[in-house]
Length: 114
Ligand code: 5GP
Ligand code: ZN
Image 1 (cartoon, rainbow, N blue to C red):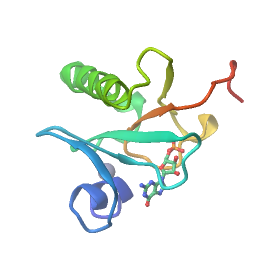
Image 2: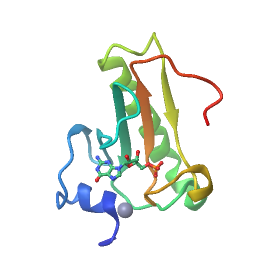
Image 3: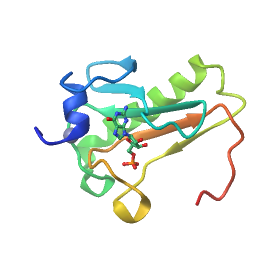
């Protein structure tokens, strides 16, 4: 989607600090980090929200979660703990309508989130 911010990052039209990439996914540092580590794991295919997922996306979403866990492992925070978040629609704080998994860590996480 030409107008989608994350599609533009995937196309290389907007710079981002990539931390992981494979044929289906890209992960890059959040521009406004909420913790020492704040990575967004993003599918290369445009899917606007979790509400748009279909059964055909099951493997893709599994790969997103596993990629996030792998990044946390590589950063040495797998055991100390990290937070994974999908915000779904504006009411939950979604601002970019291309699904993405936030992987946040490197500090103590409070619960419940605001
Ligand atoms: P959401 O609020 O949709 O769950 O998360 C969108 C995230 O994208 C936010 O955490 C925001 O800081 C991040 N973001 C917005 N614009 C950019 C950008 O241009 N580059 C990067 N790397 N992150 C962005
Ligand atoms: Zn997109």
